[in-house]
Image (cartoon, rainbow, N blue to C red):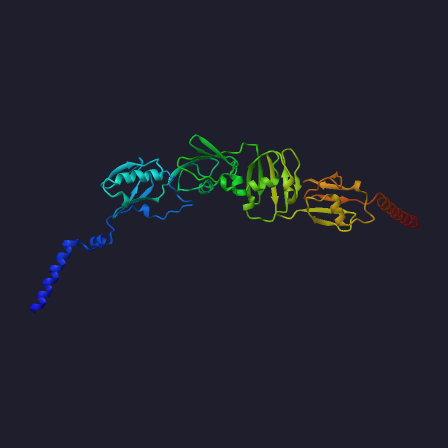
Length: 392
């Protein structure tokens, strides 16, 4: 029993001595491991994504977080709105507008008053977010908070993209007193990555509107957009600039071009790369089957799939010319909501969807039919006269 009490007394003395010498267990562990005290902001613990390496030329500003290793202490400090940073027991220094290399030297000069400079280290922990102004023909105008290392294309998509009547070929990036003009449409369609500028704090972005009457409208099934007009630009270029390559291809059959004060004309998809239009033109892409109707003195009367490259002679040839067919000058085309016959040049004049092509019989065949009709009519009249005389 005496031995038990002796061991218990010895254990209490050892525990008291341990607390007196090392404090609590956490402090003892920090002392043994050399960790020291650590204070760290929650923002510094957020994962940071960087497209390119942040070098020593990075400009420090409000919102940046810095990690400091001060001998056995580990701190995370934030750059305040006035551009200054404060280090516990060392003071404060202004690093706003300085490069990261310059800020490192200023902070090391500050902490060297208390700590050994060779055992101190400064590193970026998190980059600042900042505001960018956007105006003009863009989805969401106003100020927007963006992440560091955000490029122009990423920002425009994040704010809802450009409007249908936006002049995407002249997006203006205003930085200080300098204005950079960016062909955003060419950048996104042709992959001009060098024009995809990395945004900086204080940038302003303006997307101009297309002036009324100075554009080309493109109409797709369920969607309509417009592109700014430029002399000499082909229909294929308007198609690309409208971003139609990124839309679902519904299987376009033909293209209708409606120019101001002109009759509609139809072209095939293959002709888009060589076709130009005037300002304020409407271009419609069709996916439904279009037909041309053929009748008269041909072997196969009926409807034929519309082909923008065909003329009347092509449809008549498909219908099969026979010996009764008349001359080309006799061909008529019936067109319009209230169809009226019009004379056409069978080899050059365009044929539109819904046209009815009529090729009559030759004059000889028509005269022969007339002669047979008259002979039949006279035969009927003579028979009737004979019956009448006999009856009398």
